[in-house]
Image (cartoon, rainbow, N blue to C red; front, top):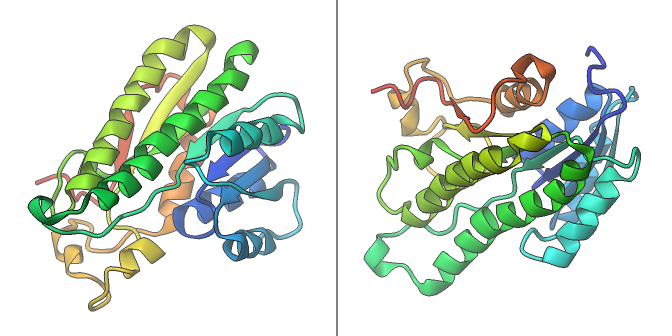
Length: 251
């Protein structure tokens, strides 16, 4: 721990488990005042309980990223400790039920797009309303390697939603660079999360055979990247989405 985020405010969505939990903990351990949201109250409490005594803090809020009023309140509360919102991490997402496109019900399309795409839009929108007056801030969007290579039959809705997140990241970077705001993306590959494990079957999953580094990634791999992308060390990076996939996209 270096304390490099002391005095900074950070908002993280989908923080009840997986990558969102790891990102929230990483920023808090570096000194940030973190506000973590999710619809899973027990999971949020578990995230908060994992933070050891240290320079930072994690507060929690039940909020559904599909609810604009809740997300507006989330951004206001995240900025409250200092009056500014320094980092917004748009992580909340669902995989949905994978099936051939011709067999997918409309309800699955609505679920995946409403959370993964529209939810990200709402979080970005309300973060920007705090960042633009301050003329600073970083938005980190969680996309996916499936933004660039679908890889698996049945993943059409998920891949489409995450490809749109990449485009949103570019658009936000283009529009808001004039205010000193950066928008960046992370495209995780196969990461050991509840979402990946929910696919069932053997562990590690067969996809490990397509990863040149020969291992499934960890949530800490993603959290470390988020810390770097939000820092001054990457201060000239905006509009880009960084794959963190052990080389899965290389072939």
